[in-house]
Image 1 (spheres, one colour):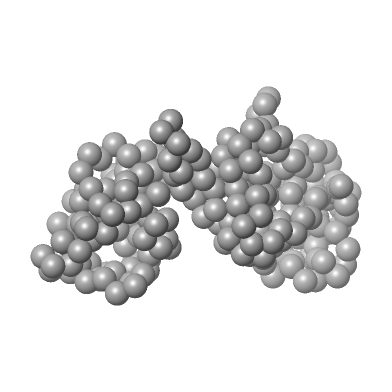
Image 2 (cartoon, rainbow, N blue to C red):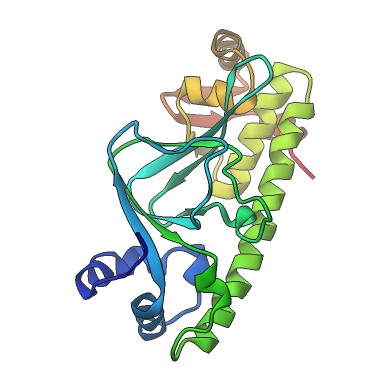
Length: 239
């Protein structure tokens, strides 16, 4: 059910919402005014609950107030492929907002107890009291985020077009190196999730990572990977 956020909920999550890409550049008074006037849906989920299943109707853009989620799809062979993971303050579903058929194209699952605020379409197209300027800024942020997500999707396609296991791993490491600005990178996925993300088997992935370590190309300890031969790895990055 759509609702106006209570003052207590706004106070509880205002610092998280300030970090959301949708609200970047808004001062706290502007954001608070928007939240007091926008009708939204707030839902809580337990670990492993399904937030949405592919084909379900979309209720609005999701903003994670707390917790984390994973977006997955199954390929034609019935294998699960991880499309993305989202943490607190992230948003998802923006590409569907103005679609004529707003149905979730993928399955979204809670990785731990999670609270999500869904912002429906009418909140973006109807004028809210004393929020005209902030609504314009929010729409601008939405367009910017859509551009960034389109680039990420293009990179994902890049992984899938690479034929060799090593090349896929190198492209994955390159993107993390670019994002983290460090020769020692932190993997956002465990081994199983990384295999699903790259659309390869976990066994083959583990074997190749072991070879890369034995050849002195990387050093890997848990989710920490040091790129010892950085130039060779960066050769397969997305350009």
